[in-house]
Length: 110
Image (spheres, rainbow, N blue to C red):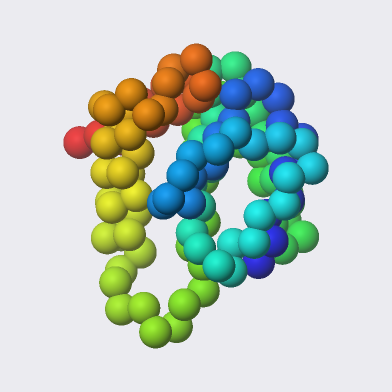
């Protein structure tokens, strides 16, 4: 599964469990290799094309993509909670700065 960033405006970041990077127009990710969380900041938006579907992320939103791994036994809910925990950990430690992604993760905790 390929994720194509068709249009990126403002702060948009993606995390693959190992690093957080800034997204840009024309970027293509291979989601078969690993899951991604794509986050938009206060004034950010992104138009993504995933398997011929167009997905629009508005400001302060996120998208979780799960790669296909048939041998995996964990539930998607557990994986999402773990990823969200990693995002909050990075926010709390200062690794995700507000000037980069805004408050894209607001409302997830709890």
